[in-house]
Length: 199
Image (cartoon, rainbow, N blue to C red):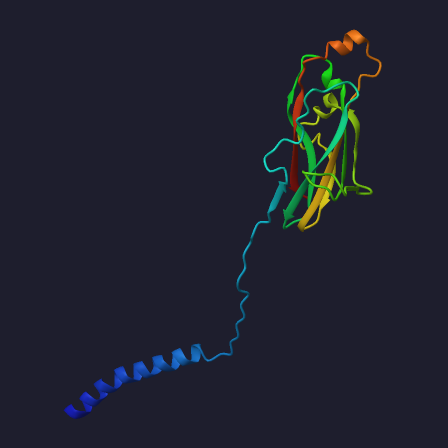
């Protein structure tokens, strides 16, 4: 073999290797393919918000109370929930008078529509909604948590309103004059609280 043939043979070998490699690469990817994607997956929590129309004022400020006095007042709640929820009411911060006064102030609670914190005019009870029968403040004060709460308003997702009417009376039925006189100058009370939880 002459010198020129040897050079041509040496040059042909790398070219053949590269060509063979290109053929293997093309053969490895010569296939049908298809793709699909499910995009935008995410998780967001729901929310519940409960407000009332008291404007920061207490519902009851009754002074110079006399045996037989009575009255009523309302408060309107607004529930704004992205998930179905339940609203319950209970008491906190009960104040003891050191007398029998807690057992002589009796309260009834009704749920309904119409009426506001300023005025109960137009209040209409809601049929089928739990009503707290007339009980003493002592009994009301035993409901101090969600688990022992009274009533229950089932709230659908969205914005809903409910008005609660509280009717009270100072009942001294069956008491002696001495027992009634012992209630003079006494003060009792409690805070009313509502809580909303998703179902």
